[in-house]
Length: 464
Image (cartoon, rainbow, N blue to C red; front, side, top):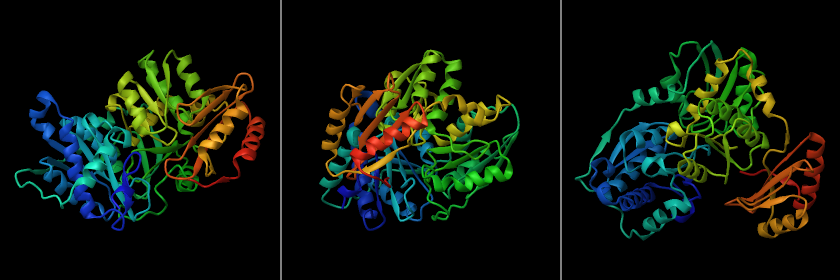
């Protein structure tokens, strides 16, 4: 049961069938032991590095799981700074603001309400995934033979950091004209952050949807699924808003619409934001998810920046951001990353930056995005394939000689010059499924290439 809740990037399962209080105590203890092992030299004597930040989302099981986790951390001789009910990006801020050894958010992000889990970060909010420590934590948790007993000499301290967090997020926000904005909190943690951080901002008329945090959702808290964006789209049109935004459950990512209620692709938004940041920081690296439109890379090149392709997943993007001192990072899933946010992602800094860009011009958001929407895109299309490696080998053989091939994440075949198309196919971590992203120079070629690939890979299916 313990092993099945450990995923590629976090810990997640149905409460209490897969993830219960006992397992949470073991995970807390194992995480504390792991974080202590990362301390070397003088770090080991720094009192703040004997502390771990713990937060939780609004799910009904979150208080119990967070308390069990804290019990386990104390069994590993770690002190705990409990920041209460917060969004996930709040944890990244708190780790750096306080100088702690790491932090853990109790959340299942966009999963249904019966799920819960933990997102674990190390020092400086470095992500802990399967290849960067999570497998070690899993082994330590499995090796615990007894229920961890908390050390009574350790402390749990409640910390209210909302004033500092508000100031940090608002440092990305400068409004030069009034804006009307629709924001759908998805009954998740945005329901707390929107009023805490954005209420009272001059020139911002904020129309909020689904602010209630009762542990149930009016719609799935996953804005990547088009039907979950419908309330935002309808409200934008009804109120003639300048922009719409929908947050996921733990509010570390968001999807935007323009003033017409049309959904904006995260790669196209990434191109717009890269342009914004490169104006004041020319020549800097911009990291992007390799599924992104060529328009993003071309925009960064045109502005004299350094476009850096990355594997899909926040662990990989954050690692490159940190290694190269990246200015900004964009991922197709709705995560955006900022140098001035400790190289971490934040749905609210994305929101604040988009508002700043829009308020600096009288042009509507659709016109700002249009120059980047110069190619036809399939979106991520899923195919059920039992032998994933065999299919990738078949694609390699079929398209060898037609384009450049690389294996950074799955297989990418780039025939943009001269044929006018490129695609990436990568494997699901958890399912017998391949995920295709295809981009072409026009809609007709998109249809042709999609039919060609579908003939090889089978009919598309719904995926996660």
